[in-house]
Length: 191
Image 1 (cartoon, rainbow, N blue to C red):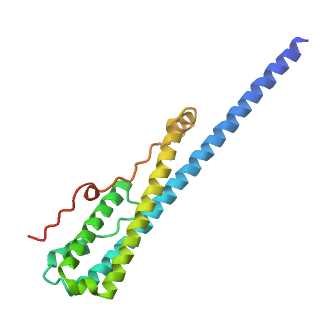
Image 2: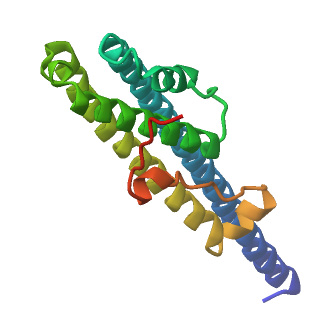
Image 3: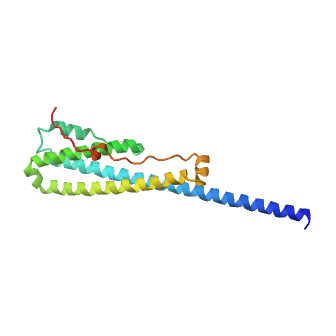
């Protein structure tokens, strides 16, 4: 074998290695981009669920207003709640979800004190809707956290971590359970 044939084989092997590395790099980069889109999509699902939760809470509040006129503080607190902006961080959305959970708990305690309200058809339908909304929100949170877990694992594990670090991919934050869900609910209607 001539020296130029050996050189040609070496160049071909090097070119093949470069092509394979390039294909792997592009493939890994595309996988990371798809994962980011899945995380954003699942975060959007949380936004939708929080919006629906807010809407149901507002309707529940409207249905109970006539029965709880003396519960002015509760009405004021709940009407102060505002939907977080679409671009809010996951931590801000988590805090908003916590505030809404407290509002639900307070309305349900008030409903316990008013048997007429508890038996009202509209209120009962809204309570059923609120249960459905809570289930949807929990599912959205699980979907989001699952996607975040897969993404975080992908950017942390070698060799895909090489691409993630080179392209500045960073860990995503999990949607944390609210403190109210971790502890007993404490409701105080006093001033």
